Structures are given as C-alpha cells and as structure tokens.
Amino acid sequence: MVTALTPFCVSSYLKQPEASTKLAVLREDTSDYTQRDIVEKAGFATMPGNTEPSSGLASACVKALRTVTVPANGVGAATR
Image 1 (cartoon, rainbow, N blue to C red):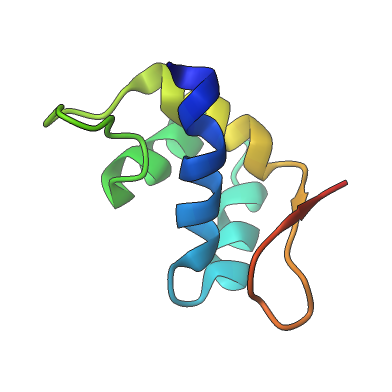
Image 2: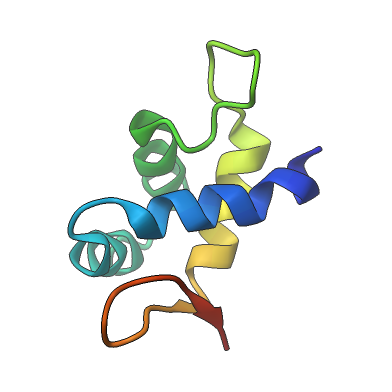
C-alpha cells in the first residue's frame, strides 16, 4: 500500500502553495524524524480511511522528495 501511495504523497506535496520553498526547507533539515514530521503534519501521509498518518508512507514520501525536481513553472514533478 505504501508503494502505491508514495507517488500520490509526492504529487500532493508538490501541489501545495509555495512547494519549491517548502521542499527546500524539507531538504535542508537532515533529521529523518523532522522530515517525516513535516510530511505527516501536512496530512500527506494519512492513508485513505485513516485518521492518523502512516510513518511508513511519510518515510517513503520523504525519500522520494529528496530526489524529485520541480520544473521552473512549479507545476508537476519529474524525477531525476
């Protein structure tokens, strides 16, 4: 389930207002815990039907966000 939802988490993260700035902040922090916490608190790691975030999904999302690039127009995403 985590593997299937990771692209949705990444896409949602990159569609939020000021995504480029927020992605830079996420990447600047070197703490895995803090990075997961950012994704969890934003709601991107809460699986459908659940009220609590999934730490596994948050971890997978953070890992993917570390390598994603944001196009110059800030819309969508492409992986390296």
